[in-house]
Length: 102
Image (cartoon, rainbow, N blue to C red; front, side, top):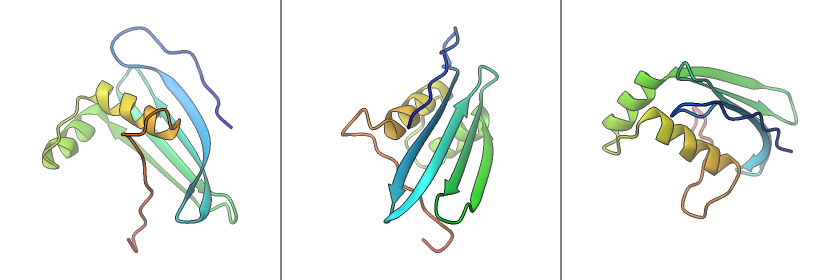
Protein backbone atom coordinates (compact mmCIF):
# COMPACT_ATOMS: atom_id res chain seq x y z
CA UNK A 1 0.00 0.00 0.00
CA UNK A 2 1.37 3.40 -0.95
CA UNK A 3 0.16 6.73 0.40
CA UNK A 4 1.25 9.84 -1.51
CA UNK A 5 1.04 13.42 -0.36
CA UNK A 6 1.30 16.37 -2.69
CA UNK A 7 4.72 17.48 -3.81
CA UNK A 8 5.67 20.96 -2.68
CA UNK A 9 7.16 23.70 -4.82
CA UNK A 10 10.86 24.40 -5.19
CA UNK A 11 13.68 22.05 -6.07
CA UNK A 12 13.18 19.55 -3.26
CA UNK A 13 10.08 17.34 -3.33
CA UNK A 14 7.92 17.18 -0.25
CA UNK A 15 6.31 13.80 0.26
CA UNK A 16 5.38 10.99 2.58
CA UNK A 17 5.40 7.43 1.24
CA UNK A 18 4.43 4.27 3.08
CA UNK A 19 5.06 0.96 1.35
CA UNK A 20 5.18 -2.68 2.29
CA UNK A 21 8.41 -4.35 1.23
CA UNK A 22 10.17 -7.67 1.72
CA UNK A 23 13.88 -7.75 2.51
CA UNK A 24 15.65 -11.09 3.01
CA UNK A 25 12.27 -12.89 3.26
CA UNK A 26 11.05 -10.61 6.08
CA UNK A 27 8.07 -8.25 5.63
CA UNK A 28 8.53 -4.59 6.57
CA UNK A 29 6.48 -1.41 6.48
CA UNK A 30 8.71 1.40 5.24
CA UNK A 31 7.77 5.06 5.63
CA UNK A 32 9.91 7.75 4.04
CA UNK A 33 9.25 11.47 4.24
CA UNK A 34 11.12 14.51 2.95
CA UNK A 35 10.57 18.15 3.75
CA UNK A 36 11.38 21.42 2.06
CA UNK A 37 13.55 22.13 5.10
CA UNK A 38 15.82 19.42 3.66
CA UNK A 39 15.30 16.73 6.26
CA UNK A 40 14.72 13.12 5.30
CA UNK A 41 12.98 10.81 7.76
CA UNK A 42 12.93 7.02 7.45
CA UNK A 43 10.94 4.59 9.58
CA UNK A 44 11.10 0.82 9.19
CA UNK A 45 8.76 -1.53 11.05
CA UNK A 46 9.10 -5.30 10.98
CA UNK A 47 5.61 -6.55 10.24
CA UNK A 48 5.67 -9.76 12.28
CA UNK A 49 6.87 -8.35 15.62
CA UNK A 50 6.46 -4.58 15.39
CA UNK A 51 10.18 -3.88 15.94
CA UNK A 52 10.78 -0.35 14.69
CA UNK A 53 13.74 1.81 13.67
CA UNK A 54 13.55 5.52 12.88
CA UNK A 55 16.14 8.00 11.67
CA UNK A 56 16.24 11.61 10.50
CA UNK A 57 18.94 12.86 8.18
CA UNK A 58 19.82 16.41 7.13
CA UNK A 59 20.63 17.31 3.56
CA UNK A 60 24.19 18.10 4.60
CA UNK A 61 24.64 14.67 6.22
CA UNK A 62 23.29 12.84 3.14
CA UNK A 63 25.46 14.88 0.78
CA UNK A 64 28.55 14.29 2.97
CA UNK A 65 27.96 10.54 3.18
CA UNK A 66 27.32 10.17 -0.54
CA UNK A 67 30.54 12.11 -1.22
CA UNK A 68 32.43 9.68 1.05
CA UNK A 69 31.16 6.77 -1.05
CA UNK A 70 32.64 8.40 -4.15
CA UNK A 71 29.17 8.85 -5.69
CA UNK A 72 28.10 12.33 -4.52
CA UNK A 73 24.40 13.17 -4.77
CA UNK A 74 22.66 16.44 -4.00
CA UNK A 75 19.84 16.08 -1.45
CA UNK A 76 17.06 16.49 -4.04
CA UNK A 77 18.63 13.85 -6.31
CA UNK A 78 19.11 11.43 -3.38
CA UNK A 79 15.47 11.88 -2.32
CA UNK A 80 14.20 11.30 -5.87
CA UNK A 81 16.32 8.15 -6.18
CA UNK A 82 15.05 6.85 -2.83
CA UNK A 83 11.45 7.50 -3.87
CA UNK A 84 12.06 5.69 -7.16
CA UNK A 85 13.52 2.70 -5.31
CA UNK A 86 10.68 2.31 -2.81
CA UNK A 87 7.98 2.69 -5.44
CA UNK A 88 9.90 0.27 -7.68
CA UNK A 89 9.58 2.64 -10.65
CA UNK A 90 12.99 1.74 -12.06
CA UNK A 91 14.98 -1.38 -12.85
CA UNK A 92 18.26 0.47 -12.25
CA UNK A 93 17.55 1.91 -8.77
CA UNK A 94 16.78 -0.42 -5.90
CA UNK A 95 16.86 -0.46 -2.11
CA UNK A 96 18.05 -3.06 0.37
CA UNK A 97 17.78 -3.19 4.15
CA UNK A 98 20.88 -4.09 6.12
CA UNK A 99 20.97 -4.87 9.81
CA UNK A 100 23.83 -4.67 12.32
CA UNK A 101 24.51 -8.34 11.60
CA UNK A 102 24.96 -7.59 7.88
